[in-house]
Image 1 (cartoon, rainbow, N blue to C red):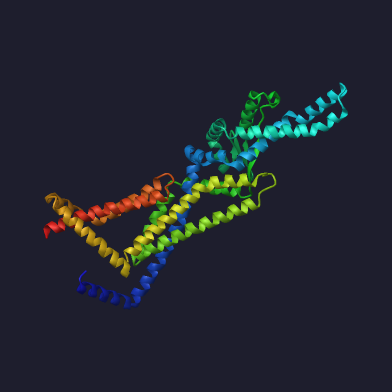
Image 2 (cartoon, rainbow, N blue to C red; image 1 turned 90 degrees about the vertical axis):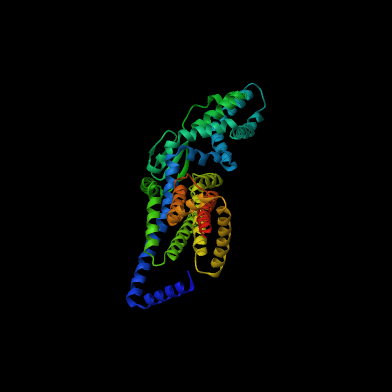
Length: 421
């Protein structure tokens, strides 16, 4: 704007602000805009959660990627080794067999003190079995079994969240259990192959291992059904409500700034709530959970993608906040825009030397500049919504791509202007 045009704009703004009716209308629009933006922020966090749940429930590869690292976790391996060793010792009744052997030896003339060796012998065998099972759990064979079991049990994840009985995972009332029978069979085969024939007596049984015991599970199942059905459309609804709030606001730049700040705060509060919930859960584990470290590892593995998604949402909010501030009337923003404009003008003058086709392209783009910019931004947002688990890097690269494309459009427009001049 020229100095006269800006003076006229300020005069008109002052006249509009001086009108009592205008002030009330402006206040009403801001109230409605803030209400819409708050709803959009809440829907945005809810949409992230819904997409996460839908991905975990319906995408087998996502679920397998979630639980695969647990097979390499030391605490989980230790808990599984303890449970499987206990099952082998119990099923084979090692103590009774050792006692029978000792009595037979005494009956055949061995010293009576042989009976005193039963306890240490059982303890030593248990320790040896534990070592062998733990080593098995660190092999590629176990990794394959773990992945296969979880891939086949993906249908059980639906069971966990909706209630019912699956092939490996069962969910009823407030508990979730997993059947470790497949792992026991693998351990038995390895021990038999290693010469420990006593392990062959372990029958093929179903071993119920409790993963979760929480009174919140019935409520979670109800919310899961709602969120799962909304996982496809809720992100777009949140985006639409956000755009509506921005359009209703008297100052759209400030409206956008207010909306993304609310969205960032909602994401930050949700992250804090997850941290508090994790701490509360681990501090109040039921007595049936013998390994708090393993429970913590499972909780972290299950929640890590949701936490990453919320962190990505925070980065998106930060990027938009920076963009709206740079588009504002502050002196630093003016100085930066002036520097960028000088660079674009110089690039446009350089491009103008390429020929008359630059002017034709530039004039065409100039007529649709605003539409192009809006389409690029909306396309970037939709792409981030549709991509499976976009991370911080994806947000930053997408932002850079939008800026580069907008810069190319602007260079062509300014090249056309330079040729006309």
